[in-house]
Length: 170
Ligand code: FE
Ligand code: FE
Ligand code: MG
Image (cartoon, rainbow, N blue to C red; front, side):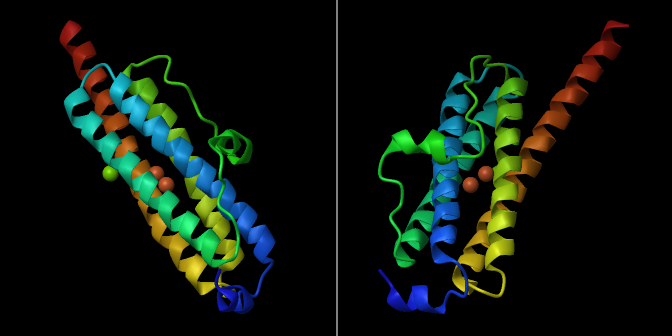
């Protein structure tokens, strides 16, 4: 545990560790949401969307590593039991019971929007007070913004595909 890391943080470190543990839980759930969703996926553009979802899954796991390491630096304990994930997470885990590509993408989109709020909040809380956590939050936030945009693009393409098919039927 880094004593100096704790000393220089000009904020409530316990509160920050709590927020980071919530973010950690959300990252693991986002990882699984993407990972299982990519495997269940059915429908148009599957071969393009599946690898992108798996890439996002890997990136969520990278976020979990950054967050867990920062919790330890701050003298906290990252969640030690997966039982805690759904209790700590503010973002819902949505079971991909309908494997249709649009449904899977919408579940991931909800997750991304929730993650964006989370890192915006952590950035706001640490801005000017804990530069290391702030920088980490911004790095992750930029990934989440990119994820959101990727999914919005896929959904827009699917929408366009549906419209084109409707035109063909007329
Ligand atoms: Fe993430
Ligand atoms: Fe993401
Ligand atoms: Mg991407």
